[in-house]
Length: 414
Image 1 (tube, rainbow, N blue to C red):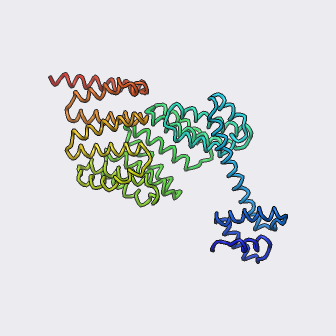
Image 2: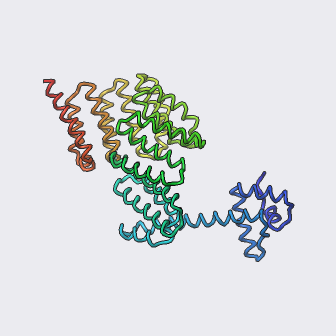
Image 3: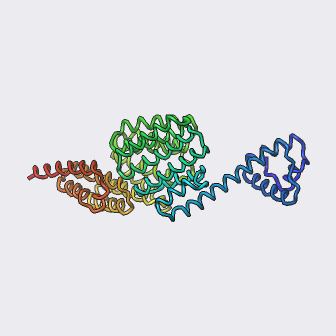
């Protein structure tokens, strides 16, 4: 059905159409945002004239939907305004404001805080935001605005986001603690499969960072099955790319197969996923010792770096470029680029990436038999003013052990 014009809408509202035409019009208005916006404007005009449209059952569905959408939009705008005001306060005042203010116990406000939590790069700030999100849930509970099942779902979302934040900060043990909290809440929740899939994805990423590839892939298989059942093709594509990332270094042929499955599912406008898929293809081809083919793919996707605003993606692209130079035999140039990548990791507070990139560089030197350079990598982790401050004891102990092993190997070479 084509869009309804203003005069057609007036006839519908004033009872100038039959039941069959009315039913078709209502069905279209309910499904068409443009016509629903026009219907809302006409409702306001008629109300101002004192001649409200007839309130029969079919049209009431339209009126109720418009009213609901308006309330939701106003709540969202109010949440944004409240958040802007709240964030100028001290931390204690922010907590008190959430406990006391009506708008802070709405779903739009909670969603806003959760989105800020997911985007926050600073681990300590992310923990504080998680506390605010949990306070918002507590306020909704206290005023009986949500049922207990839904409350557990929301808390599971918060703890899953906290796990991802801790993982980015290389706090893997604490990330697992957050995942355990999220899983406990999911068991008490509504059984929403999307939330379970999100938890599985976060768990797979954490396990992958720790080198537990088999366990991570097992979690992703369950995650993929959920998205396939739900026909969530975009999320399935992301999960397949996550799988390819894990397999690139261990089973690159399977990684390429996962990419071939994922690429047709990536939405046409998602340049981030498209670029990620191309970089992962380069990584797989490098592992398969096909550097020339990898170079062609890298050239093909290099233009996407210019339009991608995410600093982390640009840095990861340079890391892949360094690996490509290394595989093509340009060892010195590769080493300089690896050094720049690590500098940029630290500059942008991507500490988890910095630790993993340094670990890659360490293993590269060990494989090449260059124990002295391996020692330098270890000492950088342990003495760098930034890295040594953010590294927790587990990381420091691991790198101290690597340093001792490298020193022994270096001494044995003389």
